[in-house]
Length: 464
Image 1: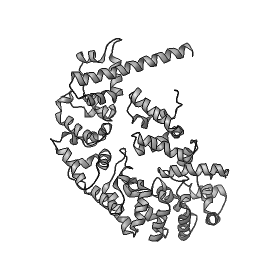
Image 2: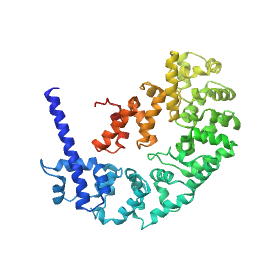
Image 3: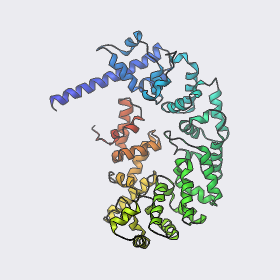
Image 4: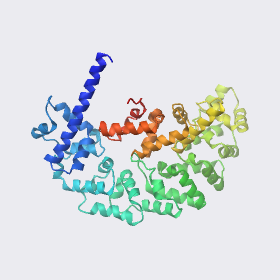
């Protein structure tokens, strides 16, 4: 190793050691000096890297955090708000103007403990504080009674915890009746609420009234209960995707081209992936394209019924530019697509259909695309093609590694986001992923959620 690299490695090691010691000193300060319980003190010290780095930068060579804080009191709300998942850019305007000690806001700490004891991850409190800060100002037992109200309707504690982190406003005001309607509707179909609720993301917002109306809408369309239950169980993510908005748009398009209710329902059951992602938007463009080249609605309906993935996977170019490029009259292009709908992508879209590959490669590709379809990618889409090209290994291994990340505590939708940003995340074995997560959280003392913004950490080579 060169002298420069040795010097750099030594400097990194020294910085890491100093940072770890600073964490311990900060924990001692909160616990021994300020009198907070050890679990609270430990959480505050281990989940505030930005605040801690700022403190470390103020230290003299041999000075400790404890000694620094004896003469320079800190605003304890800064590490508190960072420890519950809020970056400085989001919490600066939330800092109280007249107090700097957490102990001066007893209701805040009391409600903090209520949520924590109930099972809500503390790193997820940030969204609750940001969107429904009044939750932390409730008087004694008010917050717990609101949580218990949902339990009394039969919703499990695990589901309530998920709801609280993704929809904080359900703790404000009276019981959210639309959530109860969705719960009752799913229960009546024999679908476990917990199964569906896991697909909520704390990075999205949901319109529960629209979700409830969407389920009622499907029922009124004549969906057989068993068929609807099967559809939800196989593709539960569609229930909350765009809060059900996509269903209305998709049904409107399908009715417009002439599909009957039973044909629409059959299409959903056979192709549940069309209910999520950008399929509806892309399908709308494709239908317009086909009408502009003179194709009859009945023929369009036929293609949608037999080849939905073809029309809903890649955005097509304008009909004029395609006709000009191919030097074809509209009717000829229409006849070509009717004769072989699979040519639509190569003729009309910005991405060409891939050349045939060896049968073994086809099997590998099928497994990979099947995995991506399950986690919400549109089949044959540009996005899917981009991600698939970065994957190595078998499809079942991808699912295993995906599950490993989710089981570590990451949000399902966050893991999907990580894959979109850095697909090679799933090229690591589960053993390596577990080691990296352990190193990040226990050695470097970073919160698990930091992987969402920096997924490259999981993709880089692991050196023992």
